[in-house]
Length: 323
Image 1 (tube, rainbow, N blue to C red):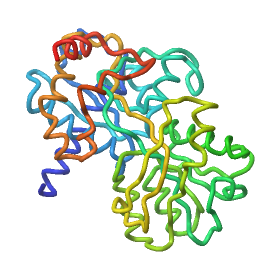
Image 2 (tube, rainbow, N blue to C red; image 1 turned 30 degrees about the vertical axis):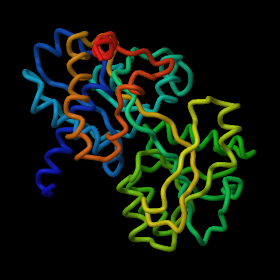
Image 3 (spheres, rainbow, N blue to C red; image 1 turned 90 degrees about the vertical axis):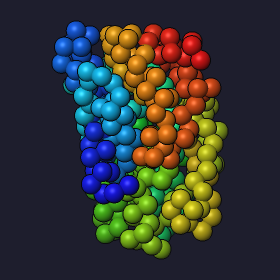
Image 4 (cartoon, rainbow, N blue to C red; image 1 turned 90 degrees about the horizontal axis):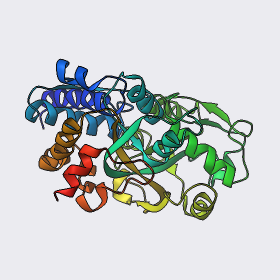
């Protein structure tokens, strides 16, 4: 894709995701009257941002009467809050954070009015560390300065907190946290201002790939396989084993890690017709999403409905019931 087209495409996508997944309190009448949809995504160098921009472009090209814009956000918790308070209509979130949202458990104070329209791809947990920091396992993070994501990136902080906990460490007392966006975190670790960063995203995440290009030999990704069983037993079986292939970031070997599925979310008050049409667009124009980011290849009818405790929107149910 040419640069100008990609930038336009991503801009459209981010807006669309913000409206559909991050907003929420807008009424159905408002959606129909304004024809504007906001999509909540994530950090500008993450997969959410790219995927959201692609969905926005599809909406703008193929959903008559609607115009989508994608919003860069702090991440999943902010996305869900934006859907709930009406700032956005569509948003992306890992299923673990979305499950906390529907349960009304921390970081949420009450059940959130969200529904899923599709399960899409997996987030891969990245614990990136400086090679000169003496960190070979999570336990070695004690006393280190660690990037734990943007203030709105609740999933990253939750995974950091949980990985540290199963390793016998406390996020609040055993490490020095820096709440930084992904671009800020990669810049800080490259310059030695922090010794490690946590990230949860698709493969490849552009910001991590750029880091491994510019700081070659100075950073590595930890093997998280020793912590999976405890993460599953103490928190949720939604955490699964995954692998970051060596070709993803140019590492010397494949890296075992922990993955969690992502959902596309909307508010529970979205009209059935609009939710149906948005779901249909995902599958009718999947090839366009794949052209934006290859993680869209993981969108599949057989798994898209598997959203756990996060209920499918009735409009999405209607689509899946026809296929």
